[in-house]
Image (cartoon, rainbow, N blue to C red; front, side):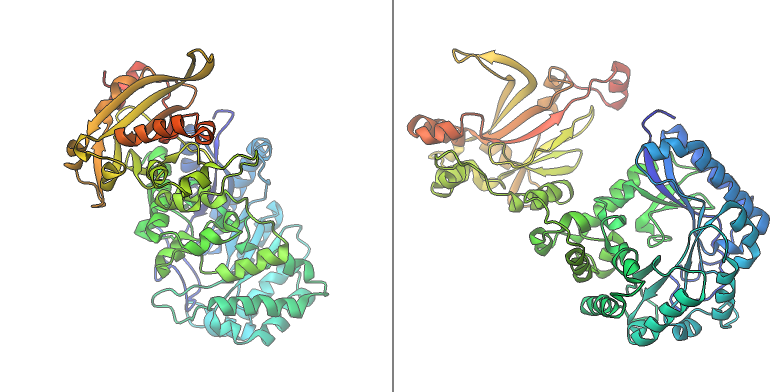
Length: 588
């Protein structure tokens, strides 16, 4: 493994078997054991294969099914291996900024007694789940024979008294639980006062409606009422620390809700080798990334990114998120629930806003919505450009554009959309951007531009004579002219007349699409390999508008001395000739 691996969070499911028959199980009948070899085999194979691709789990947690249904020798073998993994790799994990943990299991606690010696020996971190209040646990969380499980679970919790390990529980809240808040508060106190659990380390999880489940999801308003009731009940008590920190931590920026694309970070591996996004996406084809035995690590990682990115894109972007001051903490929420609810925003949005308010979270920088949408919803990005800041006494470029229809056409942020490898990048003028985005162009990548059809009519006396005008500049600089100014080196200018462009339809009928792959290919090897290069788009008539305005308006000349046209900045990595040929090559 190299010095700078890619770090991921790995959930391992050594068995899907479960000893309970909970009324709202998300695995929906899949809780049967795998057959085959030792469950340790898949984990060790996967971690070794990841390591060969320079990928390192910073956390390995055991999930299910129910982990404690494993045979004691299989359970101990897994725990011992993970313990040794942390010992060997702990320095590297800590140096990368991750907290080094202990072997960790997520469990329903029903068969914990079978493995208590292993838990004690290795100080296994235990995260248990139960229902609160207890009366609903007795109703909904019964074993496969339909028997009550609560008393046995409480007895198993008692077995952990005196073990120097982290032990906690969590409870998923539906409307049925919300309607018994008095009981719930009493049972939280009972667990804190009468068991070895410190209920400051406790998590609420908000359930969501799953087809076929008998449970009713809380409305967003009810989620806030739950939050407010817990504050009224426990502020000023010895559980206030938990209330303000752990209880609602699942909805803060430290959890997976803060990822742009959680498919870059979280992976769930089943004993069969199948890889899914996480426990929510487990078994769902849209959240399936491949199989560690049959697919390459690179393909699994790429599929994880692409599938989660696509699901966010399909959900759309809610304008309310663009106006929110805490988008950076939420990133619009879980893609699984967004898909399930057919929603563009988090199903716990109002609750999260209350938590951020209580925590005194600072507002996002004003350019964050633009930066986020540029990464995740690029067609929406032009709507969120932050205002320009020009305080030198001259009229701002924004004000000049707002007062001049010709300049509005010239700087139109919806006129051109660049496409590289199928990914869309709406283009705006480099003079108006508040943030910069860089892309990488590789050999064989398809390069296109979508041009809005009416752009050829803008400020054009004879549209049939108008043309798409492109300028390609290298990141390497040269000194031009009498001014002695150092500027990016011009590499190519190219024109394609209107009627040629209009013959090629785009996905949106308001646009035409121009294939640039063969036009740009001859020049890519002549561009900078270590600095961002620049590609500008306008029309020949709008280009004339710019230079005429510069000549006639001194304020505009000062504000727009550089090329003002819509642009994309990109890198062209220097690749060995053999690799370029394998990837399709740069055409010359």
